[in-house]
Length: 280
Image (cartoon, rainbow, N blue to C red; front, side, top):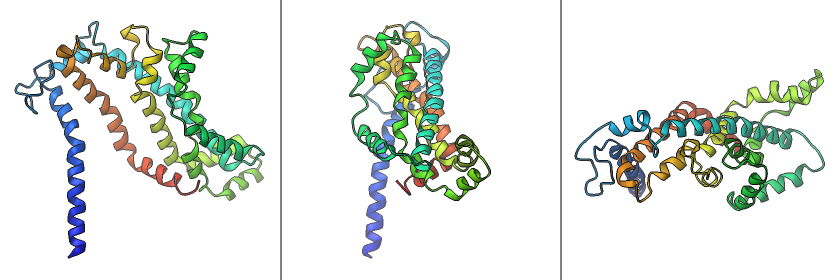
């Protein structure tokens, strides 16, 4: 009896937490279909429904709302960052997991210590460095910021590569394979889950970031902004009554690619996390 009560209480708690988590998302979605352009807090569901917010957002760009440009900018930055960061992370993980050299453990410890500090801590120094090289208000500068320290996130990938049998690499060495050949043709084909996890994680960083993009893309030219900056701009006091429901529609559209990607890659994503937690 006591066990059944615990199960019921556990399920009730999960249900309450699920409702708390889902209510803001549902409100965002239903508000995006409201015919009223401003913020309506009198009712949860809109009194009049419309898809004009999505039409205006996608096909009627103006000086405030340029969502297609923002989406394109964010997508290109995220793709470039994803490729560079994934390569950095996997190569560092391979070096720390499969190679032995004198500075290996000190470098690993240094990487872990540096990860303890918040990423925004050096943002002022980063900004002045980029300004020195004329890389502020540049998508290239933003890609460099996102990619520069990505190799420090090697730990989960290293844990996964630790599970790859060393005998396979030794057999490749005996056949005359170089370290690069072993990496690309032996280890990487067996590491699909961690590759998927690394790619998705690297893509999410620029896709969702606001702080660094706002700091670097600060010229005020809205066509160069990312989605996060553009949508945040709609919440200004002078604009919120006209663009709030478009902001909600933008939030829904931004979440769709990531949701689809997670659904498709969920199996590999979970395997990458659990595999990377086996050995440190």
